[in-house]
Length: 199
Image 1 (cartoon, rainbow, N blue to C red):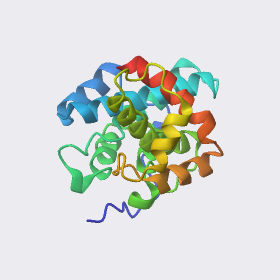
Image 2: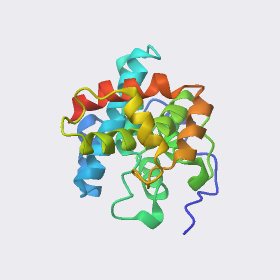
Image 3: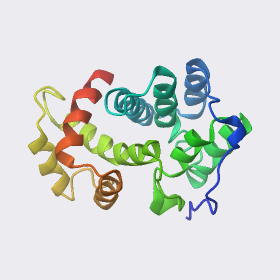
Image 4: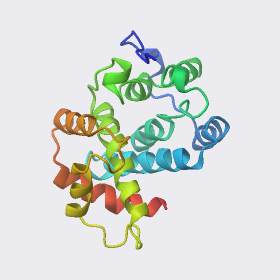
């Protein structure tokens, strides 16, 4: 099954700055995503995106929401339409005249799958958070104390165990970190700290 989008331009530049309201975004999420685990993943990535935009990029609340919205909806079509993953949500957001940067970030969150390179900082961070967020959460589920007391070295150990959270693509994590010019030692503690707030 090919998920290649076969295009690199998304949305209309005239729609720059256009976003869904938080209510609209959550309505779309709840209508399209029935799987609670996937929904949690999307909320976690959204919170990571918002927190990074605020704390590391110094962006205002308007731009923080743009980042958060990209995280919140990046997997919106995976639950019901896996064979149209990314394509369907992109077309939906384009039909709603949403900011092209948000749409492009969603389109580039899996360059090996969708054929779109992560270029902007929003693109790069969504790609970087996606797989790593899932692995950290999987680790929390196997720990009796969950996120409490979770340490960097424990996550890195699980990352090296190919059998653990086997569906998490280690090559994509390495690629994403390289593109974003980040180290595991910086990103994992950030994810642990923020992600436990979303539980």
